[in-house]
Image (tube, rainbow over all chains, first blue to last red):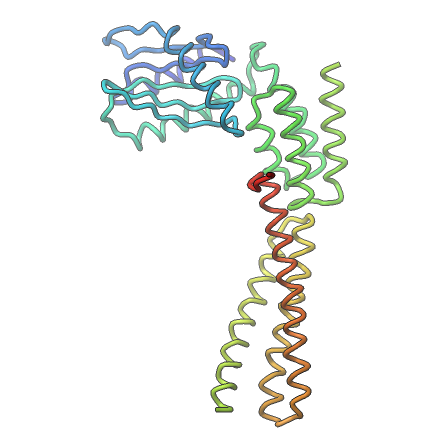
Length: 199
Length: 104
């Protein structure tokens, strides 16, 4: 990902009233970008990001969906989190603030970070390259009707296990709701592409 | 008493006509897949119900033998049972695809 563009997105979030700092971390707990409100106490992002990554990992093991929206409320503040494909965005803010405004801004930021990630250059997004290949196959087979399958593939974290499970679900959903004749063929092409890239 | 039956039958026909329109609209909106095929079966059954609903007051008004009315009623029963079976199948497959069924 382009770190300057990411920091710009985080900076915009940090200017919102009540926001103290914003962090972007990956699944391993590494800090990808961090911005603290100017003039306020600077926060070392490494400890909270590592801790939040562990929390996310635990929650992901409990929930099938890889997309999570979390709101942790503490006595002296709150942390809002959104998961991206292979990273997460966390906002450290006051306990009392304009939550609808922040939620809207957060959703927009997640969308922009997702777009940056898709066009990004970092090795961290290798899983998303597999997803793009699978998305292309879904578009080839299903054309304009590929939306739901693409959504399903993109909600995966890019790991082989999750992608295999996503292909299986995509096949079933396609068979039932989109195109029963081409569902098997689409899944076969996706599995072949994944196997080829793995090899 | 006859006119009460005819009025009830007329109300049923109106509701069923609305159902036919809704079912056809939904079928057109579906992208494809097994569920669309099954919905096609259900739409045809709804049309059969509508025909039976129209026939039944006619049989009463024209004072035709009771055997004809029995035939229409039991046809509705039979197709109703098939309809329920298709609904259960669709619901089962939909819930299974969403992973919302208890596998135990």
